[in-house]
Image (cartoon, rainbow, N blue to C red; front, side, top):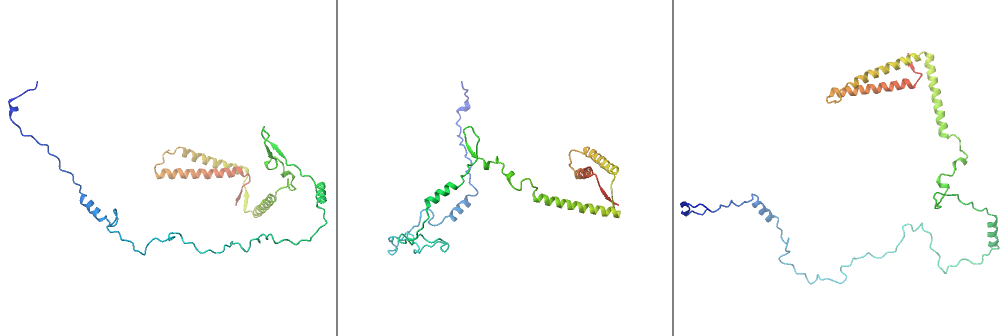
Length: 252
């Protein structure tokens, strides 16, 4: 049950809801001005007054057909190099030439005395009997029947002679320097000692390299790492040289 009081008998003024002001864009005037500026004559509905065509400008027969150029005689670009045309039917060759040759007997003799053609070699590579030629397959040993088979190629002989000549010149150069006393060869003990020293140096640098920081976030760390890598590569090349060559010459 709703409650009722004396104050409800007093008439009250009805409150009307106030609407917010209508939004007006600040670009409204610019849009109207652009619409007026971009409007062109006859853009949508055509001309206001269409001009009437004159009596002289009427559609004539075949006036819209394309105009072709005048006909000219056709000539091939290589007209001078082309063979002559086939002679006409009325151009009969010169008759009266005769021969006593018996073509039937001649053909029979040629066929009797000719050597029969050898059949091509084939091979089957499937159970259905598919045939292939043996010659282009690579299974036929053709190269062993050549005249130069088994001979050393000329370029290898030439290269061997050049290497031999270079070795002789090098030996003569070394002998001349030995005669002058300008160089000598390392003994086996000296070579082993130098080789061992190089290996020890590589191990020392490698041990220092292993103790470097994993993260090279500064320039000094990066430079030190690159310098150690370059030194180890150089030592590896020197060790390989001393291990590969048993005789090493040095200048006095």
